[in-house]
Length: 347
Image 1 (cartoon, rainbow, N blue to C red):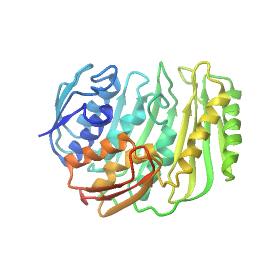
Image 2 (image 1 turned 90 degrees about the horizontal axis):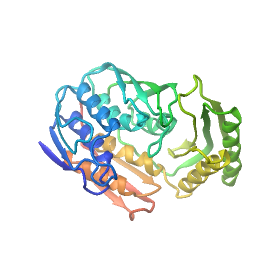
Image 3 (image 1 turned 120 degrees about the vertical axis):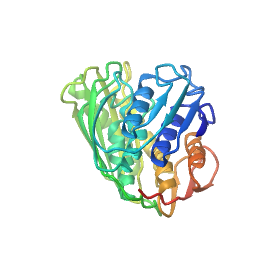
Image 4 (image 1 turned 45 degrees about the vertical axis):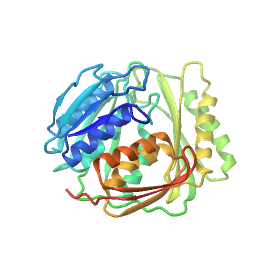
């Protein structure tokens, strides 16, 4: 059994999610303690509990400590079982963070999977679902790992009520991620509002496009009104670069009292900042790639817009579970290159 101190380094839910993913895939039992110890409200929240129980169901795992507020759990996996699943976070908890844990597990299932998940599709401290669709999953597709998402209903804080359906094809092994100099040909994006006037999405889109003119790249942002109507009002802008060897995105979430123009401009500024580092991957997509590259068959190499504490934490977790070799070239909170010699895990 591998012991993981949940207060190490970044000290948030990422430690639990990644550890659970690795445990399920490799078949190694874990004990995680001091869960989310560096957060203002430590322990398991509904989102983390749903993620843990979902992983347990998929991998036929035995668990202890799986309750709200728990600071210590054990997780003993068995066989990963594909098929049809339904999960409900029960709050506006992030569906995308649940998928960050569950999707890698399902890649190593015995057959393809179909999941219905209810919760928040665009909430604070996590990427909106279109970010996964158009950036993270595009990188995984490059590595010959295929997952597809369909948004049934958008869900915002506080009521949530969003729903997605994801289908995942199992792999025998994952190919390494070898990226060279990025070449951006176009910027795409969506500006969405739910339970708000249509002009909100249009104003967000116009503001983002105006700021993105600084890049002098063809830009297309679609204003969308959520249908069916979301249970709580909300909005966001999600942007991504399209081209060769580039998987960079950025987003901004609307809030009460925050002008629509500010939402659009904020997302655009974030994307411009990421792109101007000359990176292949934005900092958040980088976090998602540590686990698959550690399991891939061969050497991965890519440039990230920022070597964050989140990324360094992910690397340390990978080292606890695998013999993957990492070479991080650059300083923390600066752009840099990450090289990974994966273990070539085969199902």
